[in-house]
Figure 1: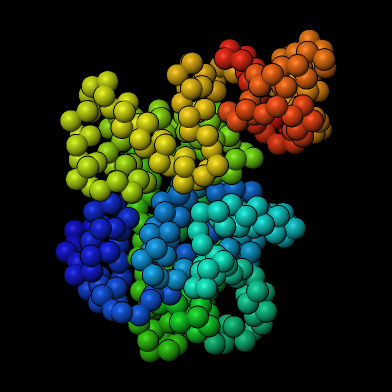
Figure 2: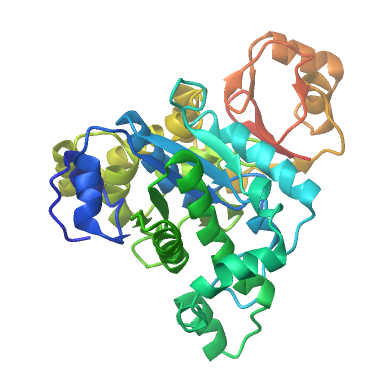
Length: 402
């Protein structure tokens, strides 16, 4: 976004590619120049057990704003997740049971609590929009709010109009999503004095509906700020590999594989990703520009991979990851073994062919030659109950899944 802010924080965020659009840039600038902390919110729909790399940009932004003294509300779409927003995809989102949604929310919030501060006095506020949306009475809601939404404007939304132009099915259920998201903003404004919504650029139309609804119901101005989609230099969304989604949850993707994803990004993407995801000063990052097109760019990639991995997986052993990477360990070349039940480490070694007997397995483990997710262990009864990478010595590896 081309704009010169008076707020040093907004200028820094803009230079680091966090800002795509704003509903009222000058007024938002004034808001950030004020002395009072800003209450803002961002939401996610719990469609899986983990968030992925595509969510990482807003997580970093929330952390930066929180570190600057502002207070985030992290909204999980327990209600809107039952519906699904009208996306660019050709089909409606898969419908999940509410038990599955609650299970996803628990898993995601457990991970978010390691990335964003929830426990401090003015920490982030976790909310679930099912707590208020499920209590709405349909006829009363239509009377109070239906008149405030223009069908013409809703049909003009890019994600909606694109589906209609392709003559693809768009259910009334999906069409309601934008109304409910707008009501979320009104509820958070009235309950927490939340004055700013942050969302991806593909949520822009939904966000402007919320800003408009608050103005119509309260005569007060609130603001929307969109962040760009995380795209690579070829214009494709980041966060996908040939083997699947790059999840943030270590139960779905090991810290080693996560680190390898960033270590192997395209040379052309390194500088911008460093600006977004590292806390290095911008003038220091600029020095790496000269490395593009040379083997030295790998130094920058390691800095990038280390920074993001230590943020998402603070307990990861980077030295062990470096060692495994230098020894030529590549996840796509490691044999994957699927287990049907959890078991002790010594039994796993025998089961997956890393040891010929339980006795040999115990000897290898107690001798310090076995690593789980690149972390050495000398306890043969360590329970293996989630996906992980197990190594024996420097050349024997198995990727365990359940």
